[in-house]
Length: 187
Image (tube, rainbow, N blue to C red; front, side, top):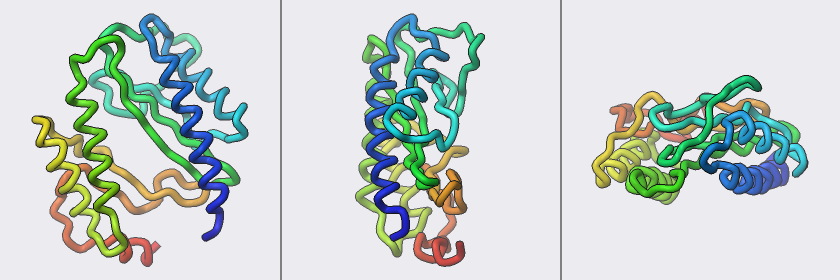
């Protein structure tokens, strides 16, 4: 497979940068400082940005970011999602993690998300329908008493393309025709 070593290297860099970035998410830390230091770490580790690093807090589900003049800071009880993409020669590792700052009020929400991801990973096979993966995610999240976000999805990664055609819904979207193998062949 083309680029497998670059995918692995990008993944290893993303993992290390993620752990570093998460360590910066503490009370009174500025959003911008967390983002800029995390991006600097990606470069220090030998990666390049596949997309801007984002920091989404509380009701913001994804893709919020801060510029140099952004005054926002992390507060006790915030639920914070750090989202990043790293590439090596165009082969991308994309990841996000959520943590709660200094409290455990939203521990079930974070666990629901992690458990849904783990179940989805165990479910994936070449002949599965994207809708089936969405159903598994929805079932797992529902067990915790939550509803999945329906306007965000998992996605395929291609060389230099962060979102490339195949979307994995976080819910049972009713599409019974899209097999991962079929969608891949159509690309």
